[in-house]
Amino acid sequence: MVNFSKTLFAAAAAILATQVVGHPAHNIAQEIAERNQFLKNSARRDLSHCASFLDKRGAEDTSTKRREEAIAKARAERGLPLKRGKVVRRDATDESHLSSLDVTPTTSGVEDTIFSNSSCLLSPEGESGPFYVQGEYIRSDITDAQPGVEIIMDLQFIDISTCLPIVDLIADVWHCNSTGVYGGVVSEGNGDATDTSNINATYLRG
Image (cartoon, rainbow, N blue to C red):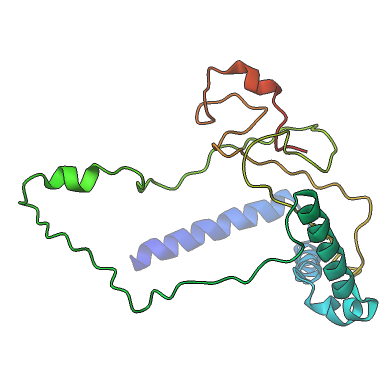
């Protein structure tokens, strides 16, 4: 093992030496410096360094007010009260959640007892796609009358280098419908693969 390691090290050194000779004008020190500078500038991945600046600009208060107004408008358009009622939750801490069934592997009809109800089945986690479609409509409502629970999104993008809002930015959003099917795509694993009309669907994209 020791001899093999020494041989491997010698071979690696020979390969590196060959590469250096093959690129005599290549400055490794400069490359390392450029890489370190890039990593240094790319270290910021959040807005923690912008906190005081954003606080002085009142960014949080402005965002909160804008979102409250958006919520009020959405609830009014749907005939909902402007404020939610009191939420009452049942206390289940004193209740027993143990089953009263006395079942063993030898119990008669045990398979029917376990597998007759298929309303909740564990399935392996998987990801279909990607089902991104380029060139969709520029719009703020992407529902296309699809049934389901609406989601209202309020997005805010801030440049981490300047701590200022990014203007003239368009966010591309796409999502499956309530049955898990993406519009604009005909593919195995995306609903009925024989339904070629789905290629022209634009729902939940924009």
